[in-house]
Image (cartoon, rainbow, N blue to C red; front, side):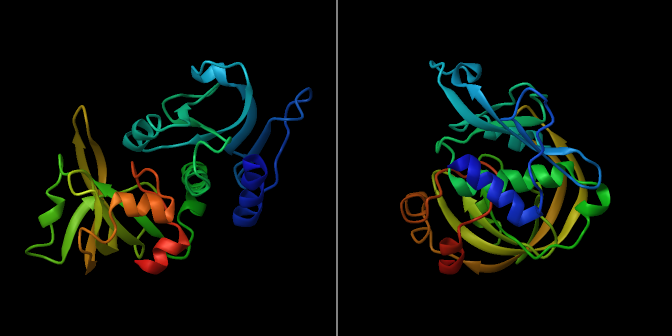
Length: 245
């Protein structure tokens, strides 16, 4: 059913129909941009053993492009997501469509791949403001106290985030909760930083809109009440969580 849901989502969101480019393969479907004909998704059937799993059972999977190397590295450590099968493993991932990866996560990754492969002019096209859940690792940022003396600060820019979007900052362990609601006021601020654990290519400026008590939206609450099972990189949020936030 996830394969059909993916087809429906891409049709409703982007108006694109599947293309079957291989004469002897009527199962593998490619989704392309109309303008430049670049793929942004490849849906196929692959044996699980191709992903290092102890099974030869066939499974539906989808290849998607992830430009952000830090996000790519985090994603391939999540259950059901692997370095891409049969494509560039540095920039593409394979996502199982068997229910291992939650539906909202799959749709969010499709959106990221669509933007990563879009023509330059389309990337700049206006879109409605979007809400994002973004992790903050206390190992790299003093996120708990970042708004103690100011209501605006610079932050690592997430893939796909644009001016006018809303950011909910989730502070990782030991806090493990959403603490701040912010508005993105500026993006694409030049910045270069790289270490073995962290790479930053651009910053965005975010303005504090609201604070949350650390006990309100904990990881357990996000998981049990809203189905948010992992917060490894910028991701969309379910409508129910958006309403409660």
